[in-house]
Image (cartoon, rainbow, N blue to C red; front, side):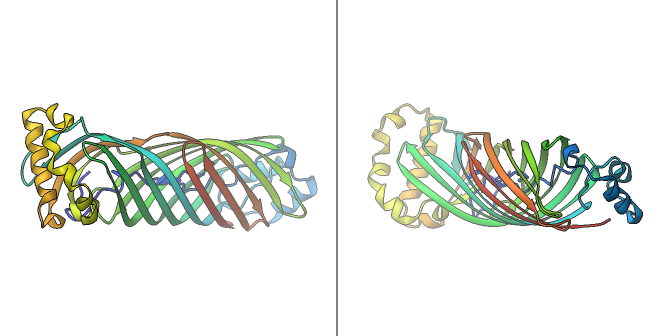
Length: 354
């Protein structure tokens, strides 16, 4: 992925993505992660919540929806189907640790040289996402959807060797993607599996960041008064995003001048460090060039070329959530991610006959 000369990669940070439909996914991620991506109500096919014969007859008298396919047959068997088309508004926050490795650097038009001796400490990516999503029950057991929205990302990177400092970069952008959810029910229980793919464009990135989120959930449904239904679940989510990043960064956006002033002594004496002594001649040339640029009084306007690999430190995390159907039209949903990745999702859905 290539990056504008004025910026740093969001997923040198990490993602959105889409958070799972749990979505960028993270999110980025996120991603989303991110994400974004809430899973549609997966319990409509639950036999223990079956319609009475009178309810079936009443619904079928006026039923003329095109979707889901086989919907009339499912209703005739007593399955309480949701309205097929959902209009969603989602808000997602996600933060997670990321791993950065295989760094390569150069200045100007010089070729990039690998500096695998550079060591990173704790790196973190945080993503806020607001998006809209449309979902459709294509079959009584399969939902398809598409989404798009706005993303705000922050990445904090900690360098340990050869010099110690941390950097924090903010940027915004847009994300979009599609996915599908499969669901089956057994009495009051249900199992759902969801996968979605996202593409996130950020202010300082030319090529979109690709993400994939896979999630599974096991839950239980409760029938409340009238048309109200309550569902709660636990699950797990796996996140992947593009590993390779290469581009050109503006030093002032990555290393503020006050940070350069603080590490100036380390930069001036870097050729005396064990790190420097262990470099190859080509690597020493690159380190000398980068150190000279940082020590330059006009360092803020200096650009450096780079390559690196990045990935979530913990690809898997746990999920727990609940939703309430206020009626056949409105559903409110909340879900939290934990252990490996922290996320919070809030989702309002309005469903329509189709």
